[in-house]
Image 1 (cartoon, one colour):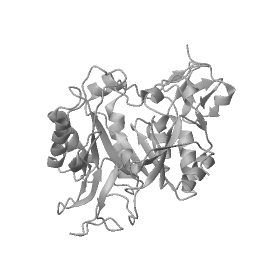
Image 2 (cartoon, one colour):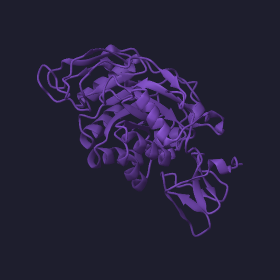
Image 3 (tube, one colour):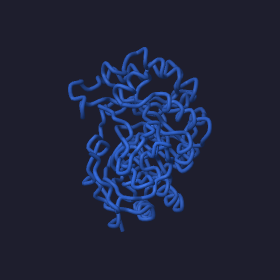
Length: 365
């Protein structure tokens, strides 16, 4: 039985249409949820009230934190800068290995403790000195209307907008959504349809379509993350095929992060990813020609470092999320061979570091 949708939760949603049988269909993502009055979609936060669809989490957050941008992870988008991060509740995927399952799988709005308008969020980000704001913890696709309004408010203050997303979205809302984003980290969860269907309840092709769209039809800076799960998506063959596709369809300059799995949610019986698996995956990606390949969720300085693809020099040396050495020029060139490094850069004047600072919007002043 769906939880009743109160009047306080009813923000008009976009991306839906009426069906001949009396239901309405959500057109936001490829799930194409078809709803009777009072029903919620698979994401739980979009539902039908009367003859219309509503978004139930507009202006409501599961919490705000100031993080280093490298935690998103984005290693080549204003390195060292701080980002105001927040999410809401719900998700349009059903990943059995979800690392934020208490938020993304929430069927109760008890998690939504913080209320904040787009303008309040933008003002807070400015007061906190954040370079950008990130929609994260759960997928911003499902609260697209809220995320786009927050992005607009932030842009008015010169603050960038970042989406951390699985990229599972239809073409029309995809155009609207990414038109508001300056950067994205997209989860490419695996490179087989079987994995997507069995482990996430979704499909691979729409994600690949989103990635090609980002590369060829937008100016959004984006990086990829693949969580390697032992026995499910970590074979050398699958990683080789994925990296070949990335090189061909997206180009060799798109950064790729291989991240370590930790047992969680519905996958507590699978062991954590050995660091050797990540190191091997990184080598496979480099052999495929990818210029910027990183490892995550493990302590591996080599896998944290940005190298020049031309001369091999170390340009940004990291220890976890802390920058130990920064050698790029202000406009992002290698100081040794003058090669332009892919990304978004400015003059480096210090870093936010490894801090994680919880924030209550309205109390930031």
